[in-house]
Image 1 (cartoon, rainbow, N blue to C red):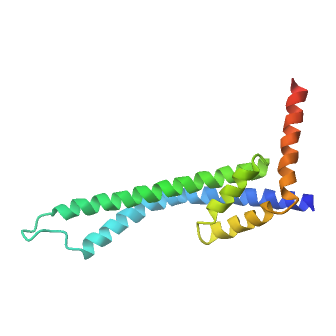
Image 2: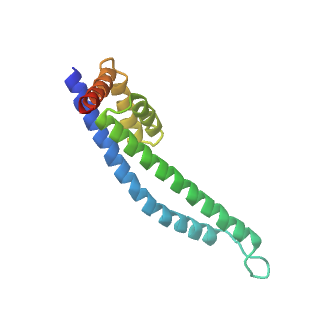
Image 3: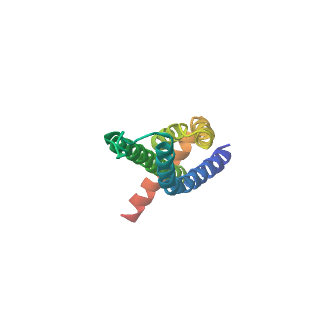
Length: 148
């Protein structure tokens, strides 16, 4: 059973790394989304004054769009880092708590993150899974003692 859990953790860790790689491409798409959002809003909203000049609300709208794009950019980078950190921790069995928190955070991103995060939480909360992390920690301590 422990070998089966180890294979599941390896698969989940690999999927977290793949999801992190895929989410990097969101950064490229975000730039286009911001430009398209701005173009659509300007086409549907009348942001000129009665004299036909650009009004102050247009500048406010530009700053609002820029803030939204920057917010999406920060969320995307954070999600990418969480995926990479969780994937590496799962594959190396470094920190049980970090893996559990990373899996919970990933559940926010629907639908792929929800499925992967829920599966990771299900596997991580099994009784025999935590011992895999403890075994790896004790093996690394033993190797450190042998080297000195």
